[in-house]
Length: 394
Image 1 (cartoon, rainbow, N blue to C red):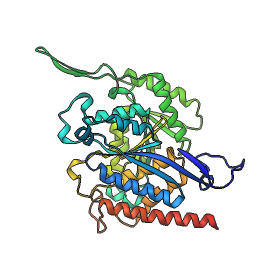
Image 2: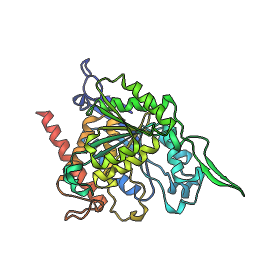
Image 3: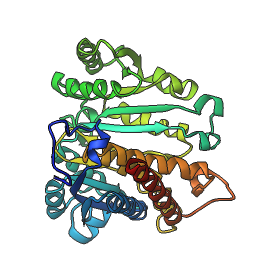
């Protein structure tokens, strides 16, 4: 990742994510590894890449893309869900943009050959310990949620999920089967360091939002949750301006659908975060609306959370907004291009306000395909950027 000044630098010009006016004076060179993956992954990723290219064209940046296989398509062509050359390309990039992994034809595979195993290995290699999943109910599509509009309209939640610990990575794990027993076991394990570092991400992020953190655990049952609660409470002392509340995971699940606007930042461990973030999709009207950013290491991983959806793959009907919103997060967290990130998010909002919907958002007289939705966002994005440039020119 390289910044190249367009105008002479001055002492007053400080390079931080908050100084949007400074960013307009810089051109960004970015190496992005694209992993389209399985199912609808290639379809939605194509639109996300087109949006990134539009951002580059509008703002004088240079984004170089390298496409590599992962998941089922990689098993089929390379014999591994995460080939060595794919991992090497990811490690040599500034950011990774992922579509989806998983295919029914590979469900019989076990261990390191599973499609999902490749993704878990990639997350570990990248050091991405914090997964950020926003759940935003846009006013224009609040009626797409099965919940009442007055409950969900205006909800804006950021779930921060610890990504490299807990049941998904704990050892020992496995199966035991003989003539006397047939069982499986997993280990939930957390260290103080793992909890502390993701807690800091949550509190730092909350400082830029509504300054509230809800820490989710099951401390009445689990020892790991008791440690979680103790460590989060200790970190909170360093952020006196942040309101911290602790809540059990079952209570959080209920409150997400009864009073979602009471949340700002939700902080939780791996398994709980996986489940709660999918539940939060009900607020947005569709799982296809949800983006994610996996950060913490030097290289960020960005992906929609909807999975490969093999039943609709190849039909050009998948919702690309989750992938496009993931691009906005890439611009914000890796490129530190806050204004460009906001432009993408504004384009999404305006397209939805114009009434355009993909099939997953319900019946509409403006139902569009995957590619058409991508084109609409790009057209509006160009208008948003042009207006901004014209304003700064004046």
